[in-house]
Image (cartoon, rainbow, N blue to C red):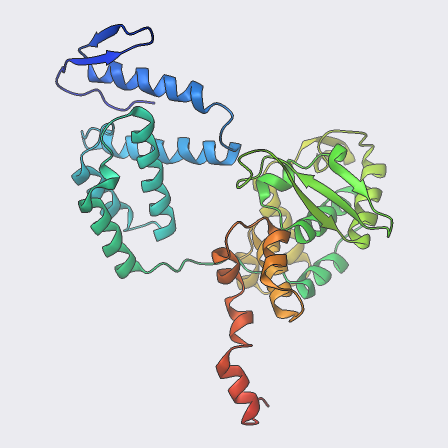
Length: 339
């Protein structure tokens, strides 16, 4: 990662183990030394998804700085503030906030002054929030009604069966795409009522790798069992690529999940605008919306089903369902204005 070397040499005295002292006259060398120590200390501390996001976000910032002859590490508060303003022209607020969080993480890892803690950066973020708002486009929720329609429109090939398994497991587990493609046959357990469970390991919020047990309904388990048998899978990844001639390949890649959903939605005749708004997150959104609309499933149960640690995302996904049970909705019912 090219972080752009400082244009001046500085002398830094750094204490090392044993009480000795090393003198470093190059800031870039000190930063690299600190980053390497952090890499070793943090090895295995974060999920694969978090590590990938940190690398990607840091690359966006350093490349932006490099193209403008600005120092990325340590960055000046004015540099980060300008970066935020520039990114706000094309990026969503949530993405920019994630960028800033990664920039802050990078500076803490390098043990250098953190520009993201300065009021200049905080004020620019606050201004961005007021200008752009915090709302962002939500994936189209694949509710049970849409899932059933897509299932019934699916074909009879091995690939079609695989697609039905992706959709069914995605809906039941509310798994993110990275979690979905990482599911393994060894983590599958059959229940006594023809249902089952599967353990999601190394998820975005599972920093301790404890795993998260998710439920699989009987109809989903029947599909999974049929798929494992016809695909000849004995162990390893549950969801596999299906190649030409019906040959079963390696693990499905994350980007294929969205393609599977869109392909099935198109075959089911869903409106073009609905298909366009479908993503790998759509089963996660749709299942949580169905739970919220049921009136029988409480928030803690929804959070457990999707592996959420806080209620914010659940609230965003289910805002429309809760609005239909709001005070205004109940008032309309009392006033006989519901038909």
